[in-house]
Length: 112
Length: 112
Image (cartoon, rainbow over all chains, first blue to last red; front, side):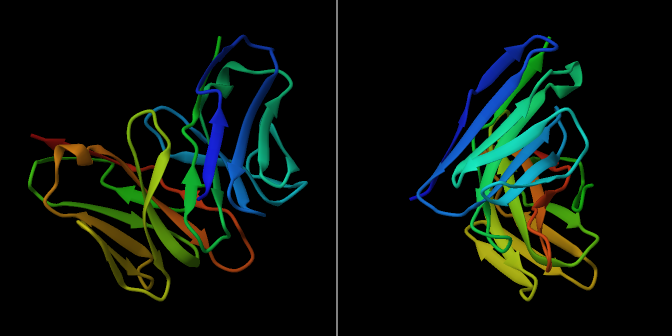
């Protein structure tokens, strides 16, 4: 069966510090991978998605970047965090655009 | 940009009653999906309905899709306190795109 791992669960980082959130998927190959951000009490904003290794599509201009160094690994990064980067970050995978998405448990990021 | 828009934003009912949530979208879709999120957790996939389907059932869940009106509804019958959560619709895109886009969600509270 397929599983998705996302870590860490919570993170408190000072403004200006770097960020690296990692997401890995097991039990499938060539998944579509997604990074979403959720503000408190709001919907999910799609940040990045990837249909293959090295293929990253960015949805919104921002202080973040994403990389997919391996087929089942998706990394969300920032060189210098801003206060506005605080939020709940969710990684997800799907088989393709016609299939359901499965989510990790999320990372609560607080930038102080 | 948001594709799905849920209505209402919040819904509070008594245990045992039925809960209906609606979702509207703007562009062509391959499928529409409903997800559930308990507070502070990742999203859980509930049901997927394809663009050529009109109704789908899963346990106490009933989903309808009207592509002419670009709308969907989620009905939860005989609600339970454990159904308290936020519910999101998401649209799987038509040709040429891979991203799964979510609405703002409906916060459902079931009162015992």
